[in-house]
Length: 155
Image 1 (tube, one colour):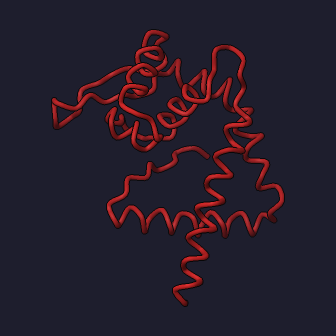
Image 2: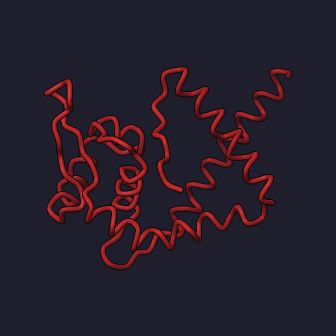
């Protein structure tokens, strides 16, 4: 494969990623106190299989440490997330979603996630499976290069 084609793939992936993020954010409900940052944190935690370090989560979600602290403080007061110690490094504070956080994420964000996922209705089932296979392969390649991408544990 030529370097031009690889660059085209990279730029296409970046453009689609940005547009998909915008599309997903546009489907987040604005009722019941849900905001894009709150939804981003809750969904970001709900797809993880283990607690996340505050700075790691903030970096992954593109949020500053200050914004992360304010958001986590608010979500913690509502019992939607909890701070937990890192299992090996006591200097690191981790955060995980609570059962109440999972419930509200599913109730308030589940329908918007389905609306966002309707984007793939334009692809045949076979194409959806192939796209998922290829994106998983790209994610595995990034992980092999030291980039932390949480494993999705949903259906």
